[in-house]
Length: 468
Image (tube, rainbow, N blue to C red; front, side, top):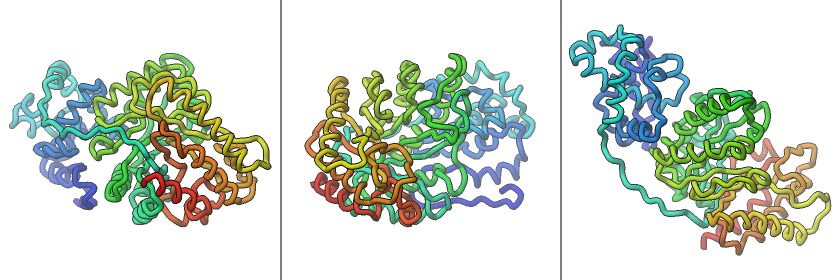
């Protein structure tokens, strides 16, 4: 807060590598004034802070540049664009820009000119900047263990509370993690969302920064708690739209598709950096973009290769059940095949437990055909059933006109686990879902979570049995 000359920070252990340099910005503003180019203020505040992001801004800038996704000089110096883009990417770009300009304008002149340096002046160094980027010197990061993880008994950990205390960043998230651990959970999928109101034209994806939202600090907090409880982490960023399902994202022409991939890449690379900084074990590069993936596989392959230059853990993509999963062929680019599995088990209201089991076994046989075809370990990145009368008919649908029925949910879970029990080709499952606050079930009795319901006993039985 420049008006009151205050900087507030969370100093919990999980945030020790973040260092946004906000307190240093107060000093820079007080001594040098407000610059015309906003990135300069962040950049000067970062100078000399070689541990930003754990290894320094130059280290991350080099990774981004080697991947071909480092922002252009024009993007960095455009104040409006600077605010809209990834704070991680733009912060390390700002540090590098200040480091570049200081000798270019001479040490004495740089600070004398700082307040009035224009965008045009900076852009006049375009050629020198490109050479500078190609010669970035940085520390070498640690070599990370990249073993394939199997026997995953996981939950999608859903940020359901949009107050500070009951989302990913809150105290209730700690209690939820402890509860999941107590019933045998050994992995969490953490899902930072962005929202969009358009499906058929390219749009920039915004980054959550509200105090109660899935902001970076909140995501890091839940990742930290999972690791503290000896769980692995799948970071699964997801686009949600109030205009419809993201599987229906479809651009009108190839120029728009190019923009779509440009915007999506800028968004997803932010989380690839976060995953690398904070040791997520698996990273999911996308979720249920059915039309975008099945019509533009080469663009997705390019994106996967770019992510791999930023992120050194295991990589996957969460395909929607049915057409998308059964059509895609880019699995060779990834470490896991993944499916969000909501195949119907029956179209009948009355069904026996044996029929539910047989139906699920047929579904697994179908999925296994594709797993064998590509010879890749497979994850169920989403699977679950609501506690309603007939959750087996349309597992993915709301169907909130049905009654609350915990027994029907429990029966589906029993069939699912029994069918999966001896299938060694399945590397793991992430049940949909477990909320960040324990009162969620009371408020949403028909929802997917088994938390506090009859199905929780089934989950605990099979999770603990599998872990032994």
